[in-house]
Image (cartoon, rainbow, N blue to C red; front, side, top):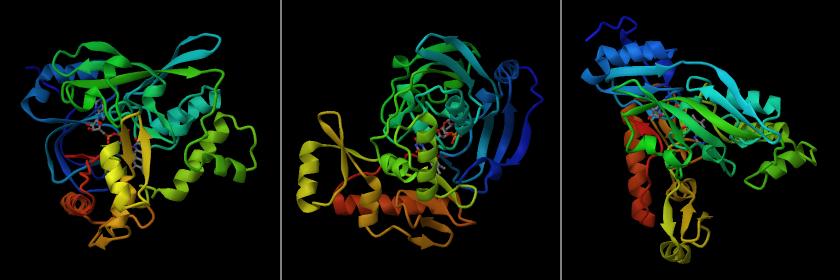
Length: 342
Ligand SMILES: Cc1cc2nc3c(=O)[nH]c(=O)nc-3n(C[C@H](O)[C@H](O)[C@H](O)COP(=O)(O)OP(=O)(O)OC[C@H]3O[C@@H](n4cnc5c(N)ncnc54)[C@H](O)[C@@H]3O)c2cc1C
């Protein structure tokens, strides 16, 4: 086993998670290039301890100190791979900030990810849960990605199909969790973009902005404005966005619920299923605006759990369990957590 020198001990993870939870990593290392990452793998440190791959820390809840090694991806770089008359292939390193990458593409006129503006986090984590917002998911424009094997250090390419994307899901959340890290992501973007403005309040926001024939920059601005008005800014109030996934149910079950709760909010998902609005279910159980100590449910968005200052991860998790229990008791629906509990 070789010696790896770029490793620090007992590092606070407070600056690295948007919930602003105090937690310490036994070992921490920041990775900025492939040679460094391969040296870390060859050292055997990752095999000796459990490991957490860290991006922007915006989809994590630390419930105690982390006893293993935190590997923080800070590799940078954006590269145009090829360009045809209609499309462009563009590759971004895992450590690039997601919104900065989206803004770069929007400014260059590369269309496809503008609806995903202002989602916190890094490019390398975007495929993990197939981030989505305003009717668009990252899988819609992801061409392929490079992953690195955490035992051999070998790079391999995954096509979109091989990533097995689903709703807030991919192969990297299940079978390949702890086995592969994402090193870079290549997107296929349009040079003749068609905007998607049917979802949510985008049309209304564009109308309020006085825009009749929107381009991708307008859509990005509209999405940013809506998000800023609806979601708490993690810089000001600790949170990790939607804490729970919207549950998927079949039509038979949904029809029964709709009989009892005619105002229930749902969206079609393929021919056989429906997605229920988890925020609506939670709100009906009276949790919106709830606060106990410094752990709470956001006052405008019941799907977002917040840390008002000094909440522990365990306080947030206890609250999450109470919410899950009450939603199950009232509706018979199991809420699954979207946030990764560590
Ligand atoms: C205010 C707010 C709003 C949000 N809105 C949305 C939204 O609209 N839609 C949406 O989908 N999400 C949303 N999120 C959730 C979050 O932004 C996304 O899940 C984002 O992709 C997380 O990126 P990250 O870099 O912060 O990941 P992290 O939190 O650092 O990590 C998330 C997971 O990915 C793993 N991981 C990180 N980097 C790598 C890597 N290089 N290789 C392999 N695994 C890795 C981690 O181990 C962890 O399991 C929101 C969060 C916040 C705080």
